[in-house]
Length: 205
Image (tube, rainbow, N blue to C red):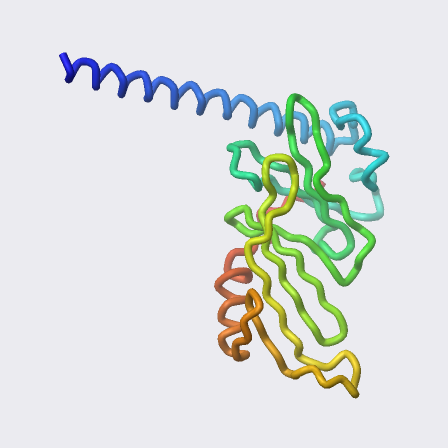
């Protein structure tokens, strides 16, 4: 009897997993369908107030060329839409999320040319900021409501911003701990460079 009960519970669990998987697949298909029409210029699925809150360019622009990719950034089984100016995330980068049949904007940035966000293969995002001889890399994840949760912070000072500065230079740190240049570059490679999305994974709009 106990064996029958255990088998029944296992079967119920399996059925539940299959049902949940199919539901996620259906939502994911709906998300891609909505993103496709959005990329084509149809903004009827864009949630109310998003166009007023965010600068969202015309992705069908005949002068500026944009590219896109899909990636699950919040680990919910449904992909987000990432868009950037072709080969130039500094020029423009954006993230769009699908929820309840509508598209929400989580990020849309074209203002800061020395700062850009870009994705890694595991869904972690990188915000890279380069300024006058310094480099900072903030690794973060999006949670389910679009808020950012920092994962790690890397900083390098290769040159002094001001010549009379007393700040140590060169200087390298990860999460507030100073390290040497070789270790810093090693971590940059393993945490970021080796995990970047390939250029071939971006599709021109």
